[in-house]
Length: 72
Image 1 (cartoon, rainbow, N blue to C red):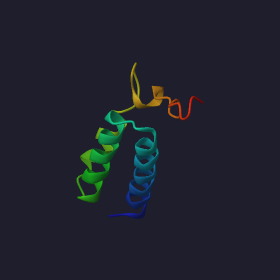
Image 2: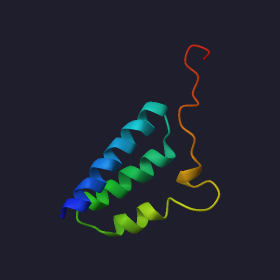
Image 3: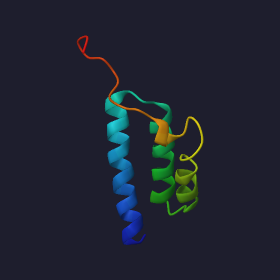
């Protein structure tokens, strides 16, 4: 595994943590799958990750931090 792949895996881990903290299940599963593929040197994980972007309802449309805690 190259250094760029290792960086991408680290970023995916951070994204997964943020999604977990917001209770987002769909995209968390998607990012975890992309991460798992890359960890296992299955570079289809890159294409899978890129498929999350573009079009209506894609990852770039996700708004996090909208959950209300204590009515706020």
